[in-house]
Length: 478
Image (tube, rainbow, N blue to C red; front, top):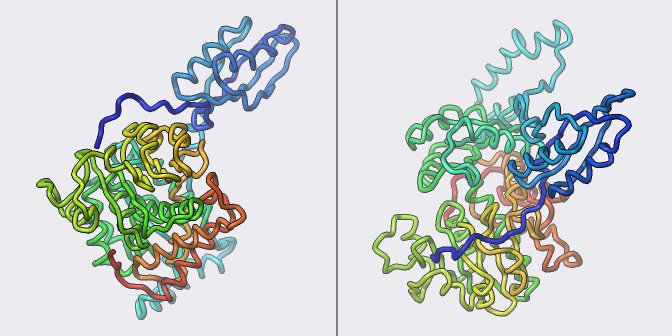
């Protein structure tokens, strides 16, 4: 794979992710109030709210809420506000940190406990009868407990977002967010399980012994290649679905988006040349699902270049890739592999391609540059040459976001009381997700629905539930 020739030039704009509220005082009769918005804008920020919280004859207390590009930019905005004559800064609050104070999720009882009768039914002595029923038939746990609607979101903190190996405590806010998404988009009760170990045996054993309390396991942000073994072993041990979102959630979304992108350019997946950058967890899963969907001509590149049978550094995962792709044995770099390709799918690193590389692709090319927050190629540069461009970013059209997949997938799995995940379910989920975009809506800037589209989770869930056929066991590899 080629090295970047320079930092990728993606314009950074103020974002709510770096939203701050500045509590300040200004003289009641001066010009300071009218200068506040100008001060923020002159520093490159965007005022989203300006609230007078306390008014007096001499002083006004005002909360100025504004969006910045990053933490340094936020401080520059504060400095600009403080420079306004008569302004006194009292407090600066980072709204993202405020949202996370005390955590983002909680346990809430579904049943009332208003009197002794209700307490006796929910807990002892009434609960004993329910426990004995489950002891006689363990399958009743799916009907009579939270198991029917609960997912464990399990991580070891080794590959969190794009932040790397930051540990289980630092991973917890991300896992909380994942649990909140499960609830918001699929009504599923999910709980973060952050493990203070990166030993495969310990991870597998820990998940195995807590599994009775859950209807599914969502593996999250576990680094490759450990994630492959963890998932494989848990699938063999457990009778509930095990789903690695970094792999299979990404694969579902990529296949759905590519299905629609190829419709836009009137090409067939069996006939296009696909070049992929990234052979890790996500890349491996995306590749397997694309092959299962009919892709025939694929070249995968890692940081050393094209994966092919002649390389002497192939581990088990790379050997599988070499055996199932690159039939002509191309051994060059990513730029050479991209030339004349119909599709580029990047799940790798920022700034590894240029607009000129995209220009060398086939006519009506499709580019999925999914490294986040900085894609493999500048989306603006790619759009000059490709017919369809998708990224992982929210500030460009066609955002590939896993929340389009995992809530609906687990909703379908839980509803079907599935014991595992099959490749057919993943294909069904991708097909359903693609079909949410109607022929009338389909276009170069709309190949994948919004995460807030009301039909996404229900459509994906229905497809998975139908594919599961009530009970599914095991996982069928590509």
